[in-house]
Length: 313
Ligand code: NAP
Image 1: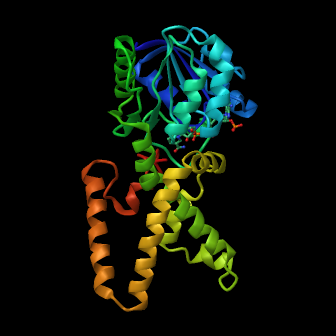
Image 2: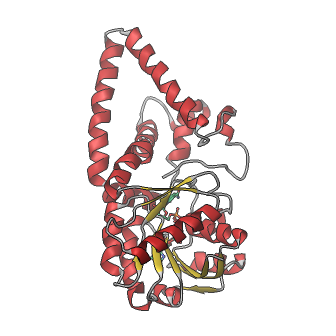
Image 3: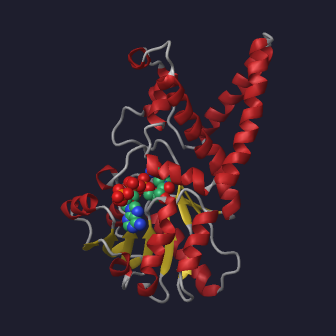
């Protein structure tokens, strides 16, 4: 047992997966859950993996040695503020939010001195949401990025070590990174791809000359893969784009320039340019497979269940 008592605030896909994986690994003694959604609270009660289920974050965090905030990014601050007064001195507070600068700031404002704040982000997920969609293997072989405070004392560094050990017990590999750098990296690897997917599926849906029935009936692999990503939770993704505005706009600017260059190459019949780019990009995919972050199976191995991974916000 790494933490005697863990509290999870927001128990959807990620929060419930943390609990399942921590239970399976024997990493926690007891578990308390706070969730704002009454239907989700009923589901969590029925799943039977929490010792306490409540609507009140303060009640859940009382006596907890590890507190994990797993609500949508813009709900992190309010949820933490609701828990502040009940946080146990010496406890560790972390989160799983997909954006780190703004979430770190929001949590820092709510976490009192004497409680260790170590923001984090598991690069693991699917396009599902809610407690029933979680599973214990979600973090296996995946990366968790922690963005610890740069000026922590010995007790703080010990808390970071312990949290790294916790994620390791859940099957993940842990990296530490500056929060701003995290936000730029994830803007490229996750946020921009989701924006492109939402946009391309939206464009197809709005076309007048091609009916929606045709789009669905003749959906080829390319479009179908985009629809999987574009089926991701609207609240979560609205929050991510608002909370990571600067990094997303920076990457979107570069993307738009590159797209202009591609359309010029098509217009001018520059097949070599297209071929060169399409060759370079295959190497990136090979690299992801070699790094163990994707399967080389047809259809990316996505027909298996439970999924080995998926969209990784
Ligand atoms: P989810 O399945 O929608 O679960 C979030 C849960 O938190 C819901 O039950 C939600 O209730 C509840 N909630 C919302 N606001 C709350 C508040 N103020 N206090 C208490 N509970 C509240 O979401 P998720 O996919 O697990 O994502 C959770 C976090 O993980 C997000 O910050 C996201 O950026 C991050 N993340 C997600 C993924 C992914 O693939 N999904 C991957 C990595 C990280 P309602 O249903 O009423 O809103």
